[in-house]
Image (cartoon, rainbow, N blue to C red; front, side, top):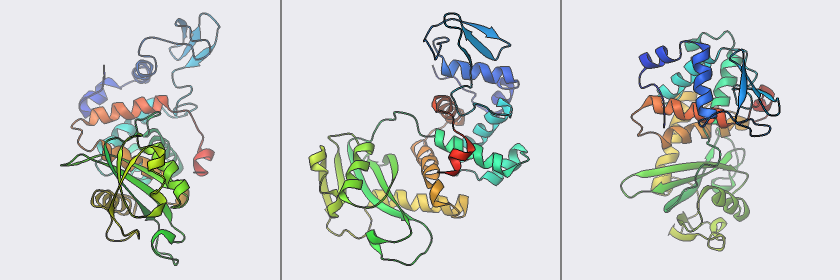
Length: 302
């Protein structure tokens, strides 16, 4: 059963202490009761309300071990406030904005937290798209010299896939690729879309291998140069993505960190109709518990 605060008042009342935050993480991590990550035994002694020692093998583990909260020096209450704030904003937040709201002394801390939470926005083992899916590519990056279209130099190329639900756009996936070759595109589509789906593309020969990979391909238009005549559904998603990057982040997205921003946009777009901000909070905390820990140095590598 999904359990989350519905309003900011409920949030403040429920997570007023560190122990309350730890108990919430415990419920999300071990919904059926404690399980030792070392031997999978189901019983443990509690040490100082923070550590759990397995009664079988003696392994000690905290509720934040093996999650993105591992080794944090800041209170969990502050992390929870950051997650509530991030999921409460319709158009995303910047590291500077997060720093000001939380009263953090370091911009680097806000930046690191934000990127960690963006990474957590991708649910491990998430479902691939299905049904009718429209696919095209777009380029992200500043104005640079180079060939136009699929040969554009100095820009990041992103595969954009969107489900066509008839009267609205379904789920989307954004997948950065190294080039628009058949090998790169086919690999990205397989990772993004369920086999058997109907895929609409333009006439670019990079999609020619899709039938061999188990997809039904429909060529909507013969033109294969990326430009103003993008496929309509994908064109809408791309327009919103670029407007979001420019408006929320002033276009200041370094190529090495682009994937984190793509993850955030996907998370927000796919939950754009959610009426409950508390549910978005629940989703992100739940996914943060399921994500392996990583350091600031790893973040810097992109």
